[in-house]
Length: 232
Image 1 (tube, one colour):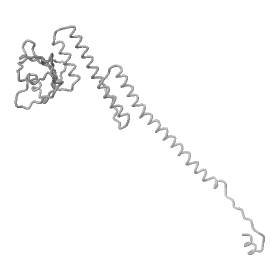
Image 2 (cartoon, helix red, strand yellow):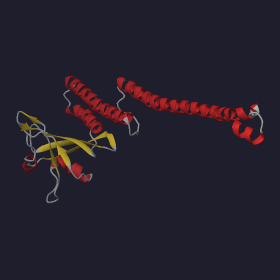
Image 3 (cartoon, helix red, strand yellow):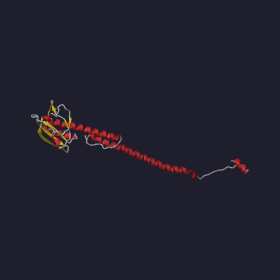
């Protein structure tokens, strides 16, 4: 300090001045600016990229959902929405597909009923009525064989079976056979449907002989009853 300098050199207090060049002082600011601008630019580009990607992740599924909804509106129930995602859009796609399938089944049922009603009013030919019923059932039920067996009105021990195969649903086959009392006893007129699985101890009943030939392991039976009497 001044006292020490005066005491040591017997002179007045000294005053010192320090100086640095301007470029040295501004160097940290220039370094910060050189680093800040690229970082901000990179951050902005990253934000824009993430925004665009997120928008596409939202817009693309929405476009598919809208297209699927338009298809349902014009009765195109066969198409399925392929969105295999583990998020809300994936759950919505599954719900859309289930709804489309149910609506398609209901629409096919209503169409079949309308067609059957029209055929009943237009003709008394039972075969002309059974054929479209079988075709509709074959489209609605994932079965290997679909059939309808009718007992003759005049003789209950005689029957006709109409059936179609899943591989050729347009070809309706007809078989005539005897209907034994033992086989007819398997059909309960009050039943709302039941499964039947052959155990191999006896031949298949007459109404499942065609299914046994095509190696069907089980069958769902729905008796057709009129006034408490099984007729098919």
